[in-house]
Image (cartoon, helix red, strand yellow):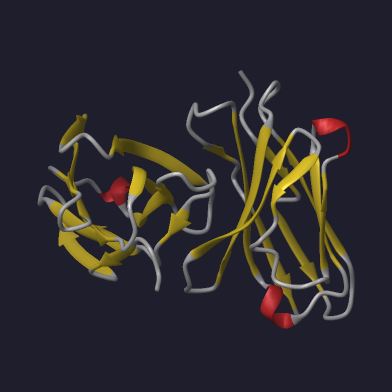
Length: 112
Length: 112
């Protein structure tokens, strides 16, 4: 079974640019989550999809972040425009019912 | 207040020694999990302990949970250089959403 796939693995962009991160969950997993770890700080929840619906987006930091999951399969997280404080590692995870999370390898975003 | 706060923040030991990391949390939980992150890479699930369990073992890992003290510990026995990583505990709230709340983690260095 393929795991959770995230790409790119690393992205370096300039402040003000747009970046789109992608997450492919494990096939058949209805639940998809985004988390991020800003340098040296704790890993924080961003949002939770159930299929294509946003179940909980309480962790989204501001309106520069837009997450979508069209068709309930893969998800994208767009940051527009990117700011320096957005640098960090963005993790995606998926689960089915309460089967436990499987995390992807993360995308390291560096905004310069 | 932050859930899942680990201590120590950093721990350096010699290969073969045991490593103990602690985690405290503040609200009632459903499960507590421990994860590992190797130098900026993805999160790897180590072990899950349910709120009605007190101790769990998996290979060289031993996890304890004391719900009266709202604390957990992760013991790694006979450590290896490959155990060098950051370790995080994560909790999901009782009757809450399925989102996980992570702490800042313990950075473990195992010297050969």
